[in-house]
Amino acid sequence: MLEIIRIPVLSDNYVWLVHEPQSRETMVVDPAVAEPVLAEAEKRGWKITQIWNTHWHPDHTGGNAAIKEATGCHITGPEAEKARIPTLDTMVKEGDRVRLGDVVADVIDVPAHTAGHIAFHIADEEVVFVGDTLFAMGCGRLFEGTAAQMYDNMQKLSKLPGDTKVYCAHEYTQANGEYALVAEPDNQELKTRMDAVLAARAKGEATVPTTIALEAATNPFMRANSVEQLAERRTAKDNF
Image (cartoon, rainbow, N blue to C red):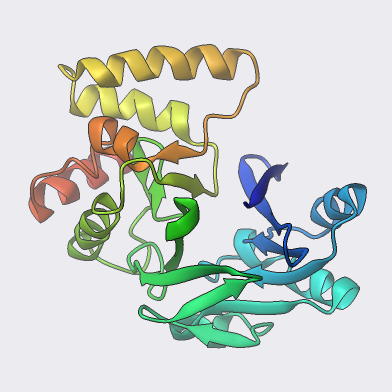
């Protein structure tokens, strides 16, 4: 049902423009900037009615105010970060639900990259918007949380159906894959995936969305077997 459009902005960010055709509502996930998002919506004849923020970082919220001024849209984001996202209208946490027309998303708490980071899981559409928590073959840096929290996040997300499409917010796949090959040099699925990633990037193609099943097979952070192993891998990646 949903139409999901990738909008590349800044150096490596992806903003997701999401249209629900029954209600004709259109939502933006983590707008770093406003202009390209407004232009894409206008080109398609869509009116932006909502913004969903996963966390407070400026490259995820920087377009909030201008989009709201232009469209009057309603902005939803993490309750735990309301002081850092002054444009929020509705604050949510795990257990809450948000709607885009008839489509319902469950909010999942995934702290670690930031203290109040959330994800939005739309079960009926097999879609999850994860911000900077889970990347293709990677995870977010532990800026405001712990390895234990990120390990718990990986466990939560790994329990979603394997076909769930994972919409993350950056094109980090090639760099993540280069480290993943060091972390798991004998992982044949990872080697095969990295060949495909290199071919795609050579042609300027995007490598996301990914899927939960693909991450379970090739992501060294989702595959970590303990908090300690995830912590070791995160430190190694930070210094890679």
